[in-house]
Length: 171
Image (cartoon, rainbow, N blue to C red; front, side, top):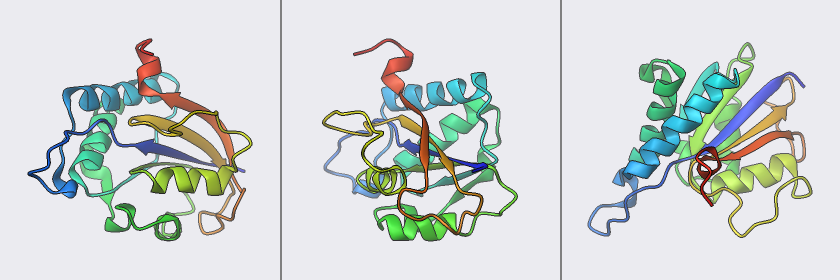
């Protein structure tokens, strides 16, 4: 296993019933948490070779803040509508298009799809027991098989699991 998939749930978003779900922006905390995840990734030497993001406002803003903290160009983020509530089959289809030369991919998206993907790839035995598996701005790093097109059930292994609020010592 020489590939790594980093799953990042978007940061905390504004709850606004006047706007449609797709256009919900991040809150101040959401922006801060996304940036802090990027700082962690830079500090720990986990820079992605490629960033995939849902085009929803909150996910794209999360990807952009994280990329900024990593010192990466936000223009390098590839948006794909299949990452917006289309299910894990579509997420795997997006990942199957990733170049074999890319070793670490950051995927920014939404629940329940990210939690479903995590459970499919890693199984439930290695996951922390809590009500919400991936709260906003949670980063999960998975060791993956050598081929992005071969993402079968239980093919991944969790390397790290980080909640943004842990970075600031919040409870």
